[in-house]
Amino acid sequence: MLAPMNSLLLTGGRVVDPANHFDSSTDLLIIDGKISAVGNYLTAPKGIEEFDAKGKIVCPGLIDLHVHLREPGQTAKENLATGTAAAARGGFTSIVCMPNTLPAIDTAGTVALIRERAAREGVVNVFVTGAITKNIAGEELAPIGGLKHAGVVAITDDGHCVQNHELMRHACQYAKMFDLPVMDHCQDYSLVTDGVMHEGYWSTVLGLRGWPSAGEEVIVARNILLAELTGAKIHCQHLSAAGSVALLREAKKRGVPISGEACPHHFVLTDAAVAGSGKFWVDDGKGLAKFQGGELPEWPKYDTNFKMNPPLRTARDREAILEGLADGTIEILCSDHAPHCDFEKEVEFDYAPFGITGLETELALSLMQLVHAKRLPLADLIAKFTVNPTRLLNLSKGTLSAGADADVTVFDPDCEWVFNTDESASKSKNSPFNGWKLKGKAVATIVGGKTVWAEKSELVAA
Ligand SMILES: [Zn+2]
Image 1 (tube, rainbow, N blue to C red):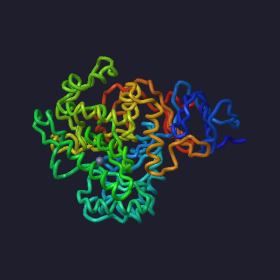
Image 2 (image 1 turned 90 degrees about the vertical axis):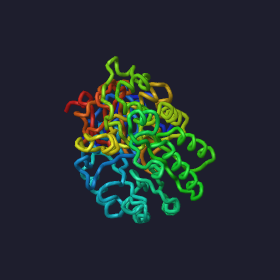
Image 3 (image 1 turned 90 degrees about the horizontal axis):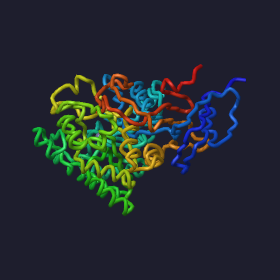
Image 4 (image 1 turned 60 degrees about the vertical axis):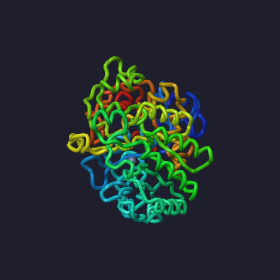
């Protein structure tokens, strides 16, 4: 008899499933692409492949709800094949792509195109978001109902921010009607103008135009008021400022349907990094230096791999983001993976595009700053990558319950390794963490019972 397809027995791992409050060293059985059972002494069908997960964490497949795949229109930066390959390497079984492509994902036809192509060329699940406004221009609403029927899981103008509050109010009313969350890139254009880094000490020293924290906080406050007014779920993307965390904390206490996410670069780095590695390690990098084993990664000042939107902020802001993650104010972790070509980034700081890659480093950096730093229990970190994003987006993912899709991530939280952009699966190399020694690494990524990526040493010999 042939062994069943897409089936696997993972033995002896520490199985952590926050959705079921489960955390125990045991086995996990996958049959025909679905979770069959979790427990000891499982009887597996004959001939089934086994994976020795001893010493590893076995958890629901990780989900990154903020990824730029650059399809359609910007495939020199990334495409569905390379973006999903980078996700698989990072331990992610599902990603949510942003609609600021060329053209923008603002019609049912474009949504269908991405979903079709993702099913054919992607190695992990791809969920699609649609634009709030036509062409992400902030002037006229996109056909939100049509986008929902085409399968989007949320709407967002990410990369841009709807400045007209009345238009945003209408977007929220439609979104609520169609049961879609609204995700927002919080940036007030009149305050930020053409700022390229955090407005503060270092922007003054370096002579770069500032992007003040208030430029984010004003829109977070706006979103809280609109969530309260309309009852729509509003999710604030890539929070960077201490004031944003305080606003969110207060609003959530009152039961406002507002949520937030944080990206590793905002809780690992600070604006001192734009002044070069020397300044960063002396001023703000002390807590992280211990992971580097004495050899601190170096970079010059004005390195455009430290330019992103919103920008890196102060050590106080970084601490506030970490506190927000620790106390549950910020429920979701993600990368804001934003690939750009070398030639685009290799220009003066003022002219470089905003954004960095992140899919392959986010698990390690999150483990380092939250779990290894003893700020957050492991199960809570996993929840921020699994059950929490699925709740926001109404996805039937993020759990190891019997019958669920067998999307599983196996990782070694203590594995020390060096991230090298030359070995990345992404088309782009714009990461500030090139050469960093990291702690924690995915060893196998399983989608629908199929191992789509595994560390070579972990692959079972045929
Ligand atoms: Zn954004």
